[in-house]
Image 1 (cartoon, rainbow, N blue to C red):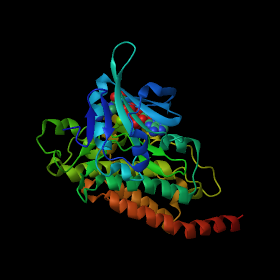
Image 2: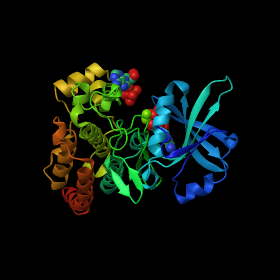
Image 3: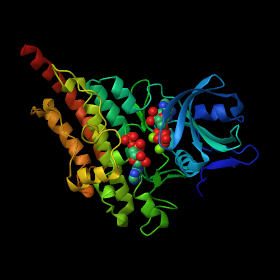
Image 4: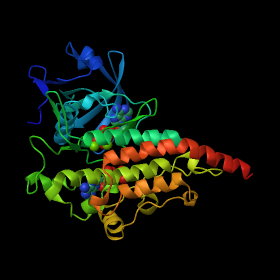
Length: 358
Ligand code: ADP
Ligand code: ADP
Ligand code: MG
Ligand code: MG
């Protein structure tokens, strides 16, 4: 059932998408031979895979390699990428193909080939660069647009896309395009919420399922073990939106226009100042679930402008302690497009204000 949507070519054990966009269709029409795949450089290591920049027949690609211990993660990520309509969306990472092969020491390994994003993930990009207001709005808007699409159940002709929860929204699972628009990636933990096999309370898998993700970005109800499994669909979407709020905070802290006349603070992951680089589940539980602590807004954001008020409110409405009070991803998307519009005017005003005050 995991393989719905793509064919398993038995002979060469090659998995290929049945619905690919035109460009990909052209390059996968004849079987792609991975013998020509060259791995050039390790570019990322997450919890489940090692990611390499590679080259396949002159084309630059990213190759995510899973060991057999992470086979489940691999099949899950493949099954999400192969859902109808997913690859047509601008803010979902571009999947090329999946394959398995045997390493020199005889172990199987599993490969996902995807488009290579030279800026890497959002947290890498923001560590190295500050961004102006409009760019920051556009980047966060594009991630949100990807998530809103993922969360939506869609019927297009005879195609059906279930609603999907990402379940590991972090600034490391968002990739940055050359034009700085962003795509959602790393669907290893994602789950279909509607259609054939949505999650249901009491499922064997559901309990395990309610406790995955990256601890740093876990919502209070996940840390507290009180995720509302009676409405699994909404509950898991709300968990994604909580993490999205943290991602906004990380992004706008690197927005040069929000620190007029002063240095932009260095990039920080959410709760890095409070809990360091490897927060434990228990530390997070105390801070987030019990103390209801949230990222602090910088001093520079104390100024009472419409722009800052709207921005802070949007973040707070995403990471609300009450999961049901949180924005939907669709609503967050709208908020961010409004922020982007607001800005041009207000940002210019702020600049003038700064100049005049010299
Ligand atoms: P994991 O499931 O192990 O977390 P990810 O898919 O999140 O693996 O990839 C780990 C890291 O590798 C990402 O955070 C990112 O820095 C880098 N990476 C992943 N895919 C790409 C890509 N297509 N282009 C560029 N960098 C990538
Ligand atoms: P970071 O981005 O801060 O490095 P990681 O994803 O590496 O975060 O996770 C930090 C630690 O938390 C790891 O040792 C990982 O094994 C552990 N961890 C991850 N998910 C869970 C979970 N659901 N429950 C308990 N511990 C977890
Ligand atoms: Mg990842
Ligand atoms: Mg992952």
